[in-house]
Amino acid sequence: MTCNARRRRLAVMLIDLDRFKDVNDTLGHLVGDALIKSAAQVLLETVGNEGTVARLGGDEFVVVVDEFEHRQEVALLAARVAQALHRSDLVPKVDTQVSASIGVAPVPEHGRELSTLLKNADAAMYRPSETDATSSVFSIRSATSGAAREVQLGIELMKAIQSESAQFMVDYQPQVEMASGRVVGLEALIRWNHPALGLLTPDHFIGVAEISGLSERITRWVVNEVLCPDSSVAPRAARVDIPVSINVAGRELGSNALPILVRGALSRFGIEPRK
Image (tube, rainbow, N blue to C red; front, side, top):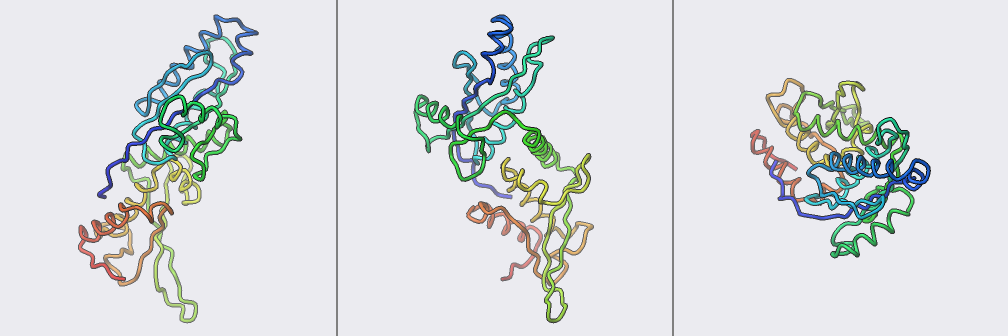
């Protein structure tokens, strides 16, 4: 697929360790200092090359996230950070149960200077946890078991796509004309053959794909799978004289990448486009 160049965007992620004061007050400053060092190391490992980590002071850290395209990518990173910090073993042999509250403010919607972005991220941190696509500033509390499962599924989905392994397949659902009973179209539906969870239908992972910014890559796979005449799974748009439809995320409909993808695939597989 020919994609548009990634639009460089920035966001500031403010992270506050919950209950850090309790650790300091009950277990002492030496344990508190060890906790801060361990949390910093966890942050560095979790964020990796997706951003820059710094300590503001006390129990507050900041991550400057760059080179992201979709806001959902930052939401997934924030969820991974929350999950990574939701633990009791940050200090060896000492039970220091902590979690994290995270506020995120993107550039330029909520400022261009660091002080403004930090102020807005701090304000977002005290809102109820939410990561939906309707808000440009958002917050994430310590990871619940459901959020942790969603984050883990997103990580596994990304690995499955990057590995290009045979974990995905397409089922074709017939579209039937009620009056005649004639099949007038097919709907291509992706399935994920998860190595541990078995065969997953789209309702189990498409939401995660959209949050993690992977939906466009899944669309690319489906388009090529449907049009490729060499695939062993029938029917194919290249073999049958019947419309085949695919599902795409709402935001892809307004993207220039989608028509480029479709035109390129039709040309590559020698299929004549028709209305």
